[in-house]
Image (cartoon, rainbow, N blue to C red; front, top):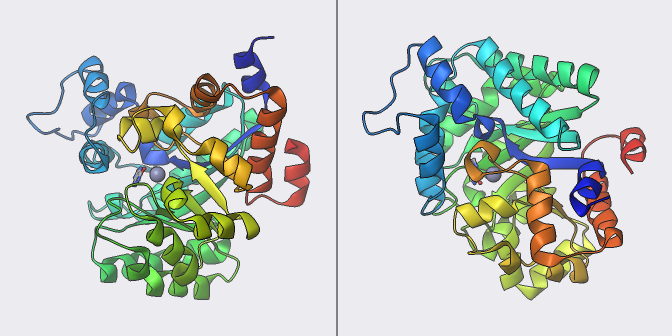
Length: 334
Ligand code: HPA
Ligand code: ZN
C-alpha cells in the first residue's frame, strides 16, 4: 500500500472549504453561458487560461478578485446544488467523510439572489451527499469582512430562520483579513448567538493578519476554532493558550502556498503545532483555485514532512475530534 493510498483511506474531515471556492473553471464557463452572465473583458477566456492564471496569485486580494468574479455566475437554486454536489463527488473520491463548509451569502444577495436559493441548493446537495456518498456535512455562513458592518448585521438578521432551524449551524468571517480585525464584528456574532445559542462560531484569523487577530477572535467573537491561524506561532503565549484550550486551527497548506503566505509547505509550522499540542486539521480552502482537494493537501504535507502512519492517524484523529458533529458520528470516523 502506497502512502497515498493510506492517506486516501484515512477517514478525513474538512472544516475549511468555501463552497464558492469549489467552482472549477469547467463549471464556471458553462454556468456563465447558461445564466447569460458576461465576464470582464480581460478575464481569461478558457478553462486552461484560467487555471494558468490561478497558478500565480500575488496574495489574498489578488485571489479574491477572481473568486468574486466566479461567484457572479451563480444565480439559481440549481446552480448552488450543482456546485456543492460536484464538490462532494470529488472530495468523497479522495476519502472525505465529513465536511463543515463555508458559504458567502453576501456575494449572492448583493446581486439580488435570494438567501433561500443559496441555502436551499446547498442543503439539497448535503442531503444527497449523506444518502449516496455517506458524507455528512454542516453549513457555516460567513460574513464578508470588507463590507460595512451594518450590512453584515443585516445579513445575520436575514439568516435568523436558518440559524433557528439549524439549517445553518455555524458563523464565520472571511474575505480580506487586513485591515478588518475580528472585533469589528462583535455585535454580529452576539446577534447571531441570540438567535441560536447553540450556534458554532469560527473566524478566519492569522492568515495574512497578525497573531493578535487570533486572540481577538477568541476573546471578542467567542470563536471556538480559528481558520488558518498559522501566524499564531509569532506569539508563544497564544500557542500555549490554543493547546491548553484545545482550540482547533483549520490549516490550508496548498492555499497558503498559492497565496504566498509561505513559499513552500515545509515552511508551515505544522511540526511545531504537533509538538506544542495545538490541534489542527488540513483543508482545501478553495480547491478549484488552489490546485487540490483534501487528499491533495494531505499528500503535499506528507511530501514536505514525511510523517509516519502513526503521526498521520493522530492528525486525522484530531480533525475528527475537532469536528462539530455529534459523538456518535465521531466514533464512526475514529
Ligand atoms: N481567506 C479569506 N477569505 C476567503 C478565503 C481565504 O482563504 N477563501 C475564500 N474567501
Ligand atoms: Zn478560507
